[in-house]
Length: 83
Image 1 (cartoon, rainbow, N blue to C red):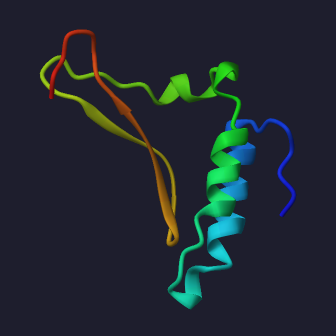
Image 2 (cartoon, rainbow, N blue to C red; image 1 turned 180 degrees about the horizontal axis):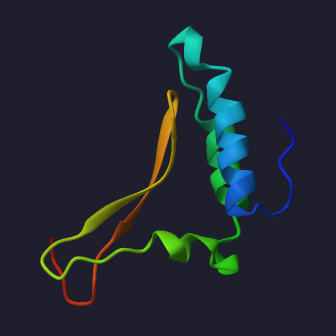
C-alpha cells in the first residue's frame, strides 16, 4: 500500500482496516505498514477532538475505531492528572 503524504482520520481508519485486515487470518502482525499510516496521519486537522472526553478523577480511553485486527483509541488526561 502506498501511503499518501498526509492522512485524515477517516483515511487513517480505512488504511488501518485494509493493512491489518489482510494480516488477520495469518495470525502474524507486520506493524510496519500500520506505523507508516500512523506517521502520515495529520493530527493538525483536529478531527480527533470529537473523541476527547475527560473525567476529573482519572484518564479516559476513548474509542475511535475497532476491527477484528486492531483498536484505535485516544487516551485523555486533564491538566494535573497523574492517573
